[in-house]
Amino acid sequence: MIHDLCHCASNNNEGSRASSSGEDETITMSIYPVDLLESSQQEALSRFRLLLTQEGLIRKRDDDNSLLRFLRARAFNIAKAKAMFEAMLEWRKEIGADTIKETFQFPEREAIKELYPHFHHKTDKMGRPVYIERLGQLQVDELLKITTMDRMLLYHVKEWEILIDRKIPACSNKAGTCISQTLTILDMKGVTMRHMSKQVRNFIQKITKVDQDFYPEYLGKMFIVNAPTAFKAMWAVVRPWLDKRTQKKIEVHGGNFSQKLLELVEGENLPAFLGGSCCCPGGCENADAGPWNERIYQQQQVYDESSKAMD
Image (cartoon, rainbow, N blue to C red):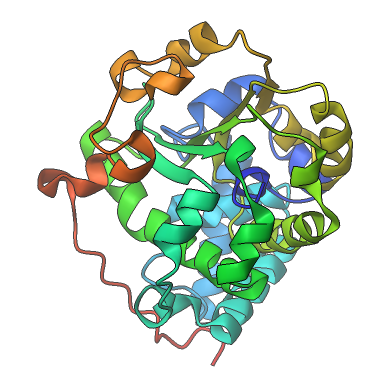
């Protein structure tokens, strides 16, 4: 469980009070997040943007939806959101996140995906990119023979940057509206407690911190399917790391889940092993199928990340 539950983390319990709309917001905020703001929240957003601009912290990539992620994660407390935003900028400088897509090479990627199948695959009915992991096929011992956890962490950050800079904008272009979140499906078929070794748990904690602190509020919905009996013990380990707001976005199912998934994803967009009808040549896990690979929806992302922020 390396890229999975971490993608859903919003932050600590401060985020659970960000809205009174509850479960409904999980569905709607990924389409029109700005339009759904209450007047007080809209005012907070304006003040937050002005404050960041005055202090030279704002970047070209920081549209209203991006700033809202930090405000929601901090219950629209501007001071706390600003501290979170500043920490994010500092971390990005330290890790080189602004240029990681170009500078970090990960030649072991294809071999890693054989040992740990994880991939984006088309979109759901709302236009959100669908992210899938087949956790029962994870082979941690073999994975660590060809890479390290430190390199996996950098790879994880690089994948985030590709998602934000290329995949989500393409999904928005295809949908004709703002897409700001994802649908995640974790296939637990074949998972046993060996998949939750101490080393894996420690790594999950590391990237959970990265995701909740520096990439907040990207999850729209998560389906955990084919959950085995042993999942209860695994969930007991992971659940305390997630706030209540995030937990409401997660549904856990055993083997009878296909109909639920098909309510959110068209059958032609859902891999056959999850109850859909898609059978990409070479396997859906290798296709990287989605609007981001369709020229009509692609856009050149040019961000001035060498701004004065945190200089």
